[in-house]
Amino acid sequence: MIDKPKITQGTFEVDLSIHFGNLEKPTYVAISKGKEVWIGGISQTIKKEIKKIAQKSGKTNLFQAKSYAQAIVAIFKASGIYPQNVLVDRDYTGLEQPIRDTIKEVFSQTEDDFGKITDNSMAHIGSWEANNKSRKSNYKLEIESSQIKSGQGLHKANLRAVSPGVITEI
Image (tube, rainbow, N blue to C red):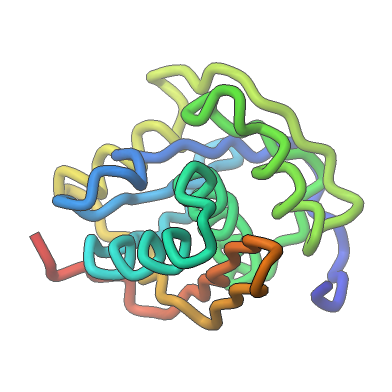
């Protein structure tokens, strides 16, 4: 748990540019509230490292959803936001619970839901503009720590957001 700042009222929308399973390109996760947008980018090198951690734990099926959730948490933490409500795009249908659990580990009072983020959402626009290099990300996402519990198959690669958010890999 992080120290709980004042809860920021309203709903934050979350979308990503490219799935975490695409190891050939960076992924950008964007969070928006109204016209405000916070974007975190994760390089393909970091995604490959996280996948290796997941493979060692035998939880490769959760690698993408858990990475997505960790990115969401890292961006909120770096931005100093404790969200009241989060609407996460349905990029990982069937894996909503691991995403929800990861968010709730840090933001226990946040209400989360999953739904379609529209093409005119600033989260959608922000993630794709960062992907197309027409907008810079606010944060670069890196591995902060990783954990693999022997016999339990727990995959956990905590991400942290650092500035500036320029991803140089292609």
